Each structure stands twice: as structure tokens, then as C-alpha cells.
Image (cartoon, rainbow, N blue to C red; front, side, top):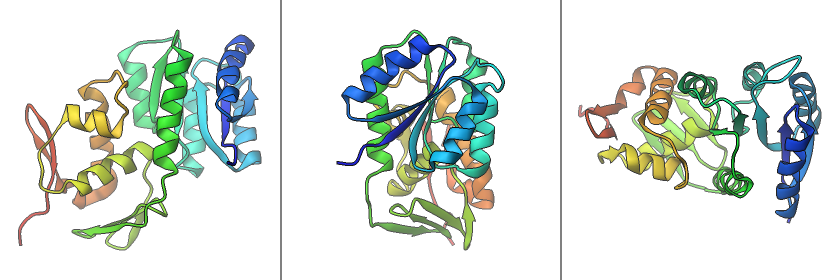
Length: 227
């Protein structure tokens, strides 16, 4: 089996070594960067990085700047933010920028690896199914979405969220169900996570964003208006 390449970005060499050792045991190839500028350079040099583990507080270019730069050119590579901060605003900012997971230090390396594996399993699953609902066309194999023929760039989590909505058209979905499906079972998140992603997804879908209905006090429903 071909090794998947993980870019680990942290200015603390001890932290990079800890993460690298656990990932290498799981047969991942690990590339390291000690600051944001180096991370961006490596990302564009390597081309085939499967996932990025990214610290927030770093010299030269912080994690937020790295995410902004990478998302300008690639909306699909999964990004997990590693941070010593646990403040709500930092977490929300990360999701707004297109971060897929958010893990505060200190963390369990085993849980971190489990989350990485869960994300990569979902992002690398080959699915031939194509859906066309109300002008939204999703090709899961190509990992593309178009609205009325126009391509829409979605982050990994936004794509997974839309896929879950489309697969469950017309069904009321609780926030708990959405968290369990789109995020893995050990994700310690809450309603803010889902609501932030839904808001951004609706915006990217334009008028079609109205298909995602809010069910107050429960969750959401993906529903096409009756003609």
C-alpha cells in the first residue's frame, strides 16, 4: 500500500517528533516544517500531501495565515489545527477559514492518529455515485460540486456535510446525528461547529442554500421546494 504523506507543522521540535513517531508507526510518510513559511513552501513543492497538521502560534507566518494561503489554491486537502489555546473564538475562526478538525494541546497522540485515519478513510473512499438534486450536482468520486452548471469550491468538511444532507433528503437530522456522521464519534464538538459549517455552506450554494432548512431546537433538513 502506498504511504500517505502528512505535513506536520510546529515550531516545537519535541512536538513534531512525538507526532511523527506515532504516524510513522502507522505507516504514514511524515514531512516536517518548523514555521509557517516553510510549511507553505513544502506544500506547494510536494504537491501530493494528503493531510496537514498545523500549529497556530508560529514564527514568520502563523497557522491562520498558512490556512488562508493554502485554501486560496486548494480547498480539498484536510487540515487539522493543533493549538495550545482553547478559546471558543479561536476554534470558530479555524472553522470559518476551512479547518477540518481542531485539537487543543495537550492531546492524546493515539486519538490524534485515529482522527487522521478517519478523515483519510473518508476522503480517499472511491465512490462512483453521482447525485443531482435541485440543480446541485455532486460527484463523490471526483469530489466536485456544481450549482446550475457552475463549479463550487467546498472544503473537505463542507463537502461531507452536503453529501450527508443530500443522502438524507427530506429527513430531519439532529445535530448529534450530523456530528456523529460528518465528524467521527470521538469528536468533542457541539452545535457551534455544525452551525458555522452550515452557514458557510449555504453561502457557497447561493440561492440553493435555502434547501438546507433549520429545524429549531433540533438540527437541519435538506429539502427541495415543491413546484
